[in-house]
Length: 321
Image 1 (cartoon, rainbow, N blue to C red):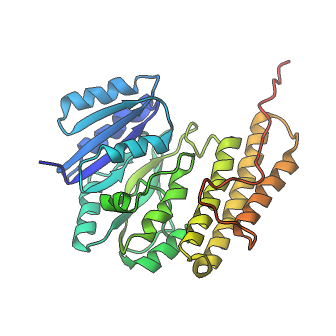
Image 2 (cartoon, helix red, strand yellow):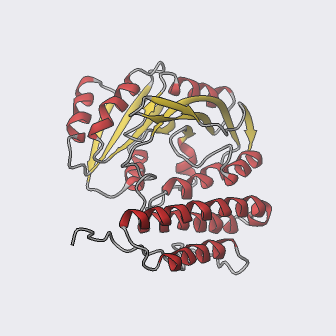
């Protein structure tokens, strides 16, 4: 008998946090689920930790693959999942014990395609959790309303992990996570576009761990370019569905926020690297790319969206020489 829910956990060198993450899964009050751990070529003790849980718990299993990135790991997990419903956990984060129960009941009771919960920002070093302040009120949102809120990325956010999905959203619409950093930002709008209803609870049931090695904390030119690229992918998707005019104002407001975030990331990277070489040129490159993705001159593509003006922050200086 197949499980009802599949929980996909991409893992890459997260041995420091993985056991705690998996313990939070074991404590779930909802029990009809499987755990698909995708070990994405870890070189630390992550595989050993995952294997120990698979030996102890029959609903845990592990898939090993060469290091291919977070998007590939998620896609592998989806392909090998058996549940009717899907959800995700980052391997350094934690779940409230009622995470699966509440999201499953929301999706079933409201016949929704996606259920959504609020989350806590968890600072492990100080053991402080801060509830995300801006989230949609508890309720059921119809397609247009939910999609509009997601495009704004204010009360509904692009993260893949604080949601439960009908697996058919991925399968019937051939949706896969884009092979890039910030694959969630690029992919989540597609899922919401095809969802007829989204059921939301404002209860924080997910703990997003903030630490110095997280993707958000450690930015570089590749991640910055992919962050900008995600905006272009969203614009391209809206255009292919003839929906850009409808959501234009929200998209532009979101793009302005992205620009400020990218400026901050560029500045932080330069400070980290101890140089100011070409800093203003990189500010301009990021700005021009974002402006292109919101402009009337944007050209729709059937292939890969390309960032027209790439950021290329110099490597760290050897300050000791």
